[in-house]
Length: 360
Ligand code: ADP
Ligand code: MG
Image 1 (cartoon, protein in one colour):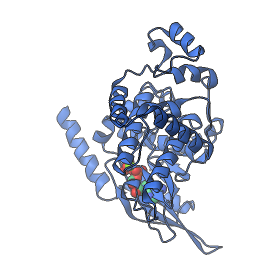
Image 2: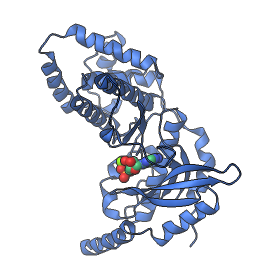
Image 3: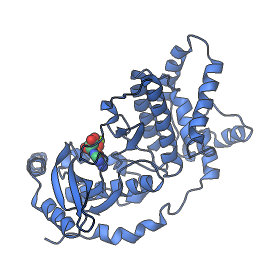
Image 4: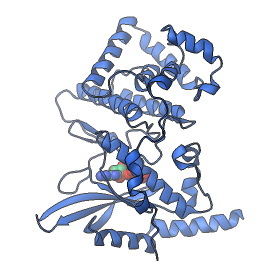
């Protein structure tokens, strides 16, 4: 039935890539009727998994216009096959994916983005405001100017100050702080973090595209975190920034104690720089690269069951040793952040609305 799958994928793609399908148009219409938006405009972005459209909301009483963004997930099956790894092991999606039902899958996917966005937004991390979710359609705040021009991705950002090098470095430090706060406060690893999923405006970074973000207890969260760290380091090194080692950043992000707000996080990062430069001599940049390589290939135990000799390791961590253990922070994390039953008690309140199927 591989052929049948292929045919169905083709048909799905045809409906999802050209114009909005009937179902999506119905949802948009409903959103207009309910006043979430007044007009839906053209696509800001057409991607493999979703299209993002610009929209506006007219406030008739004040005469003001607010821009919004609408992310419409595509229902093509193929795309979602390789996304399963993010869902499997995610306790918030215990049922997992029903792989045969692509509509259900995109709905889950949009829901995941909405919930993750809400956590990030509530933590005060710059990101689009989550406004409304209906099946595979997500309405969010627009990141852009008042004329409706979206902020550039970090990849395309042109810094215009008179000390561009210093600006890139401070954006790097800002991003490390965001990653730590996401991990410690939102309990999320972005899992697709790069210069493509960060928008830039006026010295400020905005996090987007969080449908695949996972909680620290996801079986692969640390692997994803390590990947995020690598992407971020690679990008800022290309911009000429003197970056910290992947290992130092990993420890900074996962350390259960320490600041989670600015300017304290930035200060903590400056401390790491001091430590690094104190210990270093000239050819240590090369050594750092070697350590990055080692770190990237190091086995990360994800759960305490996977740790080889937990008692011995825990004793060492208790004595203030064990800094060579990649997971020393995780042992400590168990004490500081015992697993919470429900990280978002307020979340159930709108669940019923999210779950409502559109009758058509
Ligand atoms: P994809 O899954 O296709 O990568 P993203 O969430 O990354 O989807 O969005 C794709 C692009 O759409 C982004 O690179 C950005 O340019 C634009 N975009 C997404 N969300 C917003 C928003 N809230 N405001 C303005 N532009 C946005
Ligand atoms: Mg993206």
